[in-house]
Image (cartoon, rainbow, N blue to C red; front, top):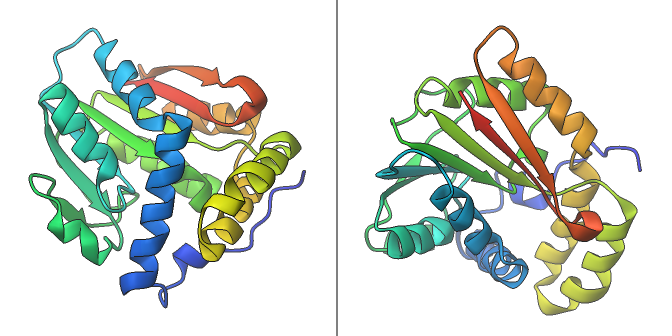
Amino acid sequence: MIRSLEPELMDSPEITGAVLDKFHRDLDFVNRLLGTFPTIERLIRAGDRPVRRVIDIGCGGGALLEHLRRRLGVEVIGIDRKPPDHALDRANVPIIAADAVTERLPEADVAVCCLTAHHLTPEQNIELIRNVGRSCPRFILHDLIRSRLPFVLFTVFLCPLIGREAAVDGRQSIRRAFTPEEFRELVRTALAGTQGAFSTDVSRFRSRQIVDIRY
């Protein structure tokens, strides 16, 4: 499957307000169904350093941060280029409107980034990884995999459960995602010449991939 460069609806500046909120509610539903939040929690718990603050890049409405704050008792900060309106209603989950590729990020013990890498170009992902390393000693990247099997599974089992816009975008997200080989090469390029190291994990049925970076 060739990587698509067509933008997703969610990335359009015209998608705001209630429509964007619905996108994020559907995305939260998919993440909960797939166990994304417990997976990120487990990885953070498995670290060898104390974790007091977590930042989430591309946090949307802040649902993952709300989960981590409640389960881990950590301070949380969200980063998103256009936080949805309903994010403002979440207690104890501050969200900063910023571009994590180019702007200075808050210092934290761990940065996480779920289902955002495929929205970026390879060059932007490289710059994002380097930028996070200036503020955080660890970066957990969670994203989709471009492959026919997850595309078919998403279409058959998840599309009927979410809104039309999210279903269209979800299929396009898989088309835009990187293969594990491509993603590993991006990380190697970003960390070249540094002391950084990383590990990867690909789930069953290639539904998601995780890159765990230690700077």
